[in-house]
Length: 259
Length: 259
Image (tube, rainbow over all chains, first blue to last red; front, side, top):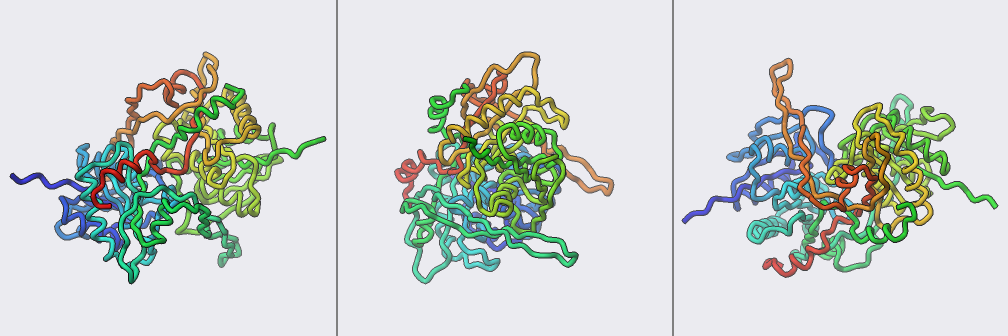
């Protein structure tokens, strides 16, 4: 008896022509039936933005031979909404994957990440969802070492499902001479960007700024995503979309005099 | 002995000319010294987007008499980074407030909210931070009932601080004939937007879509932000920026065969 192949929606934030998306599509074709809905332009740093003040355009794309694909004018979160509610007319796919991002999305970067917003949007819609990122920003980055791990992780998620209300944030170390050491389930490192604004003057004499910054990690735990990637492991962080600080509710109920 | 007045950074996502921002500035002037850094255009639905692919512009604004204010071309999260690292040259303010948003940011809307991204950015930077939103999208919404509560909540946060690593998501019911019933510490309701794409044709015969949707809440708890606002209470949800699903780590460590 042959089982129906799983339906897998693929998106990203680097845009439909990114190498990382092609890598992800290739791996997903080995596992199931693939539907691509991806932005028509780079959307890095878009966080969980959605398009509500302007209309969206969506076109069929022939970028991937033999794969149903659409490019759209919106954000990664828009892409997942479009995939489920417009292309699939409400039918949920079996899996949502996003990436492979050109650049790390460990630690606090998850909040700014378009890649992860697509995955989290998938989780909000009740679908198993995974964002994949590689610690290499190069447009021609080497993804070869990530492919067997992407396949294993996606197959595992299809087989056992994911805990309700969670998405996975998967980060790969950049390609090294040493082989990857394995997969570790991690927590988000408590680190942040220390910003620097690079001030310049345009040809018309007006000031403008570039947002730049240094990543500062004071988290010494060896159970973090940063530790794993820095030690040549694949990090897997299960993520919530319920942002409630549940532990803080009794504290405020106790301390606040204005209740 | 006179104490130094607290320094309060004020931002929003509806832009520097929004009525809700003016309301927030007025209340904060009663409490401390105010610095405004706000977007020069509406940024609703921007989530935690930051500007990394284009430069930022920031100009002094005379919108608020007697208040140091800047308008910038970026997102709400950019505004907080600019306030701390550019205008204040690294000195953290005593409090960051954002809003008052024209429209509710309860439940899942926190993820899409520019208002809350400014507050969460403040929390990432280690400052007490609060986002305020009103369940009324009108550009001329009535904020009069929110002012005493905004003052109480901001003063409480300045007095007792907030639990480390949290920001507050405060939502007000729209103005009603009945007075507000009080303040409740809540959790984020488990609800979501059921999307509808409204399909139209432009004057050139090309299709375009508007993202629309219905808010669907199946969460029957009376401890949620949705319940509170619907019952004429002010809801206060403490929020994390560590998105780790900590409870899911042992589950994955137990279930996954590929580790």
